[in-house]
Length: 74
Image 1: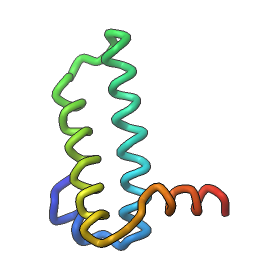
Image 2 (image 1 turned 30 degrees about the vertical axis):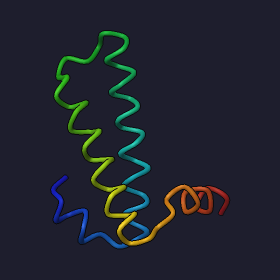
Image 3 (image 1 turned 120 degrees about the horizontal axis):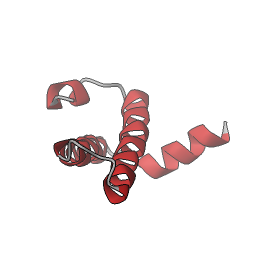
Image 4 (image 1 turned 60 degrees about the horizontal axis):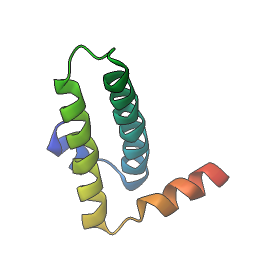
């Protein structure tokens, strides 16, 4: 995802994107560990996507972990 797309997201969308990006990165790591991942460049881009979104969240002062727990409890 491009940086401009991440910056233009609303706060709740950003938190959802971080959750999905983390799940995606975990799946890619698991595939890499089991030897099923063919495109290893996707792992790097997934990590960068998570980092980019977390950076934007920190700049906005969003506590991502607390927001994710709150959304899961609802």
